[in-house]
Image 1: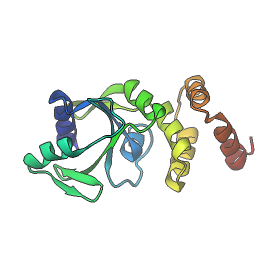
Image 2 (image 1 turned 60 degrees about the horizontal axis):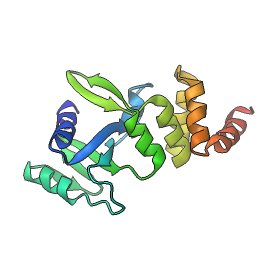
Image 3 (image 1 turned 180 degrees about the vertical axis):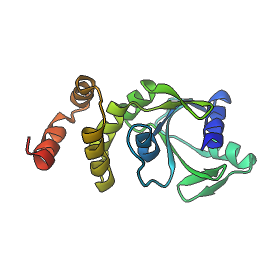
Length: 169
C-alpha cells in the first residue's frame, strides 16, 4: 500500500488532483481494528472546480505508468485504488480538514475519524452501520466536533434515530 500512496502523492505533485485523503474501509483501519475491505478509497478535490468531473487525465497518466483499470478501481502497485472525486460539501470538507499521517515511511493524508463517521452515517450501507458501531464503541473521538459536523450537514436527526435503534438512547 505504501507504493500506491506514493503514486497518489505524485498525482497531487503533477497537479492532476488538488488535494486528497484516505477514506473508506482503509481509512477506518487507521482508527479501529482491521476490517474486511477490498480497496484503498481516495477522496480527492479536482484541480478544476467544474460540475463535470472527468477522470480521463488521471487514468491516462496512471495507464502510461503501467497501471491497469479494473472495474471502478485502478490497480496501483498491486493495490486496487478507487479514486473518488468529492461529490458533496461533506466530502470536500473532510478532505480539506484531513490530517497528515504516516503509513510506514510515507507521508499521507487521512480523513479525520469524526468525518469518516459522518460519511458512514450519510452513506448508511450495512457495512457503514457496522463500522459506525465499531467507531462509537472502540474509538475515543471528539464527540463535540462530530455533533457539529452532523448539524452542519443535516445528519443529526439520522444520528439520533441510529442511536435509538441500536442503543436505545
